[in-house]
Image 1 (cartoon, rainbow, N blue to C red):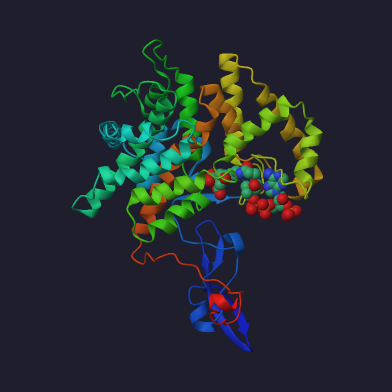
Image 2 (image 1 turned 60 degrees about the vertical axis):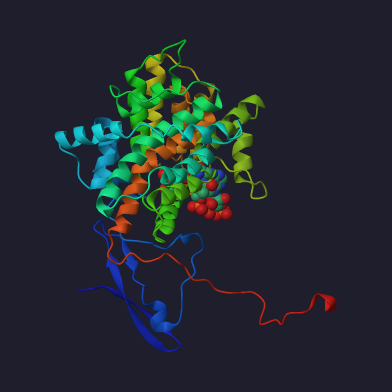
Length: 426
Ligand code: SDX
């Protein structure tokens, strides 16, 4: 029997159906609420509001579950590569061997960036943040690659271009910011190895590809590949709903991700840990500051809108930290401090009552430091990882026959009707 809820408005009873998800989640379908009752709902931050029905990613915030197209991330992190996971997210199923090979060839064929784009990079101020450069350059791709004739062909080639070129563009911004010669992608290297080579190869010191670092980067990108309706994914869907080109929609996602409450947190965690060490601040003092309502300080890398238990990605990231550090005999005081902070916070009543646990950003920056990525590039690395998720979510919107322009309502609390007063009389 179909479930529904009853709402009584001014003595009249209205029924609204319940939508039941494949994992048992439930939502009230209020798509006819205003038409039937004249009322709208109010939900700042959309804490209780679903924006869409999706088949892509399933998260259970209480149980700490994350699956891409049904496949648990723990299995993907262990057995898959970022390119294979990207194909799973975008196409909905794990690719057969020949399909994966063809996808890899297409990515390689589209890895170069138009030479004229280098002029853009050279004209950004040297201190420009790589995320603002990336957002601008992804938007600029449209100017270099105008729409093809058929929509289907256009989408497929644009998807491949975005996935492949975002990696090249990220490495280019790093090289040019250092005044170094740009390194071109190589057809003989895998997606992640190519990125590391483009970042760190130099004419004086050829970059030595370390398979363990390539694996750690693949795991990093797999863990970041999608996360259902996050702030940046919602930006991609909202901007995309106006029927802008995919580059523009993705560019808005990159801009949203750069915020310190969102993807910028991985950089903010490292800056926080560094500040604590450089100023010899005690762990207990940090915990007290995080709890103090009068203090705007938050323990970066802790807390999550959905996870009210340990972020499953953080668990895997922490494990990779330990594995990498052991393998290369790395020592990083930031990792030791992060573990001390986690131990203190998880024992503290405030963090327990607020269900605040480490999220992916708490350890991810330490893995990137171990790989040699500069801190101001951390969120760019996150953006490369999230690219398949944004694309898959955009495609799901675009494939919806009822794809509506996203345009929320509001409740007005401003002035009543007020007549214009000529300036002489003010
Ligand atoms: C990402 O959406 C996604 O999926 C995002 C992401 C993805 O993959 O796309 O997972 C990536 O963005 C991870 C989150 C990275 N951000 C940070 O680590 C920044 C620090 N975290 C907080 O800013 C916060 O936890 C948020 C923004 C992540 C979530 O906050 P919510 O859900 O809006 O909850 P809230 O801010 O209303 O906090 C609820 C309570 C508040 O206390 P009360 O006023 O209720 O007493 O918890 C407190 C907050 O003050 N709180 C924290 C805290 N996070 C929340 N207190 C101290 N330190 C923190 N980190």
